[in-house]
Image (cartoon, rainbow, N blue to C red; front, side, top):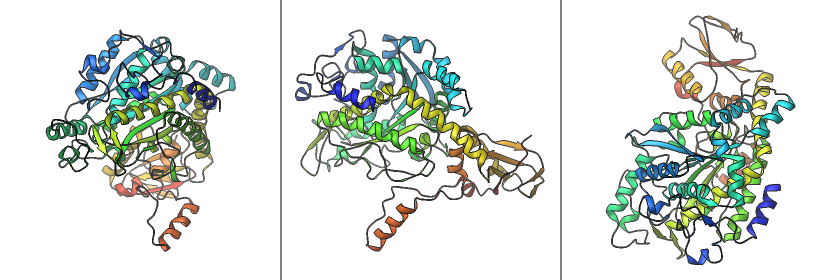
Length: 518
């Protein structure tokens, strides 16, 4: 609990570094800013208003301006930030991320990636090797914003966070985050959908924003901004990787091996704010250590929100079962991953059913607070998080080696094209697939050869989640759902409960203990 105690002590001091650029970036009104203006910001680092023309939270920043602003930050502070273009959307828009860290870390990013890759490899390192690696390796956090284009506040929160980390002067929390971590900010995961939303909102906006939910500015014309160009929900695409945006993101994830992953979303405007721990059911392949560490992160976020009077909830609605989400796929790779859900104004102001007004600025600020609290927990528990990450990957190898059905075998004679496509999909997300010639395996003859996946690999738990015919829901959860059904109540599942890729592709697959991979 070192981080939690340290956080509470900081929260008691002059408002902490909570308010970020309250005057410089305009994230909160005067009532919130009162007494919390002791943070100095470097005038050499430009604000969003200086580059784009509006203060943070005052307007919905367009995707091209998001890129322009982050490039301006890189120009102002090249020793602490790098901008990487990792993909292009279907409509040709760049997808970028910003890498932010201390100058000494930025100067050796390739070495950092190599060290994290060693920790992620699942090898049984000696205690001395592990200690040396962890002592010199910052923990990588990937913060993803706005995978649904009409979930609009997260990308502006990303810009506020980047500015705060680069412009805050003499703030102990920011200094510690930069020293102990590498922060990757993926600011706009769906630029095509966001562009569609901003266009329709701008077309409908009158002389002043209207809070009434039934006004035109809150009514997106079909198809809305949620989806990408081909109307695909990319928060269900993580393991299928059918979209170029997803493929680029998965490749970048594998390059960095983040120990913490945030997927920042919005929900209906009448709701408040959600962060993990998640609701039941939990996927059985999630480690108990991951669940305990989620509690650690959740308690610290709660402390920040309590201090600021921001309402929130946990353990409701959003479960941790289906592996296609932006929190679950990283979790099954070993990360401590979470979804953020901010009630959405779907514009600049929204009147909730209880009469409260939710502003765009409020949503941007809340996302910023949740992200900064997450980075504080990571920075204060770097050793623990790196150790747990390495242990998760190593345990996956050891479990697979002990399994009675260690190997998955695909028959290349049955729907060969689909079998090859499935193998390529698995390989693209880091699951090793071996190609064997004609022979015998699992008591069967494969005259046209076979494709084999060994569970004894650091991505073995992800492979099990994707290839097993059934991932069982926890028995106690199923019992509760039966009780609810008998009482005429709805079930508590959020989304998909079945997704086996071999069934989807119609591929013949078997599993057994012994396959000669030589």
